[in-house]
Image (cartoon, rainbow, N blue to C red; front, side, top):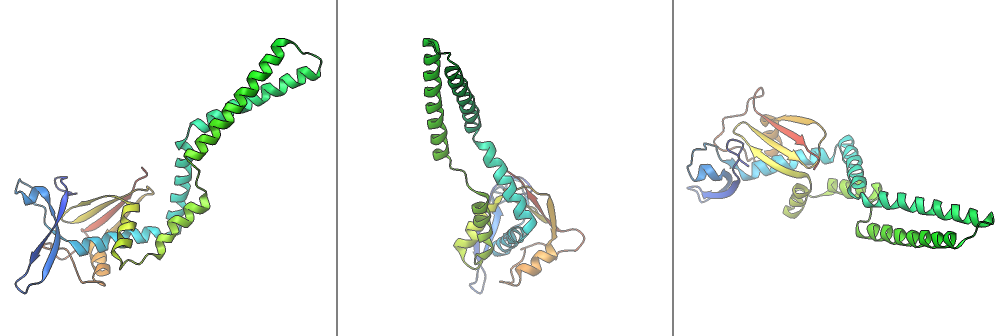
Length: 231
């Protein structure tokens, strides 16, 4: 998204006099010349920056453990039926035991037998409901979540499909300004600031791409803010 007006940013390309194709991200509003003056951003530079910052998150042990803990917490909150059914099942089992104790004590009437049958039927129904809920939404173990997330550390960032998988999993949105990039992740654990100078140095190790039409970054002002948001 454009940080200036909030509109979506789309990819476009242009050919230089030498025949070289340059690809950019451009604000939809600016392209239509409807008031926004957001400058274009080189496609490769931005994508390298986003991938690099995301990989820093993935390689941070503390951040990943926090994510794993939050995923487990959210998973436990997702299904509210199972805890309810389990409580009702415990109540039914307790009632059955009370009925059996009464029978052993010599208290056996038609109503006692009828009540026992009702409780046993309730128990069977609750056990079936719990089984159905667990089959519909099987709980993922903490070990599997850790394995699934940490496998992203082994991705080859030179492969387009693997870069895309990383972005699709961790990135919620990206807002581009003329002096900073605001990246919102799907997980929240504080914020991090990276100067464009540092980011340009990292990205230039690949294709030497940088921001188009933006002055050379200054250490004191330009920065990239990373926000982690649990959704």
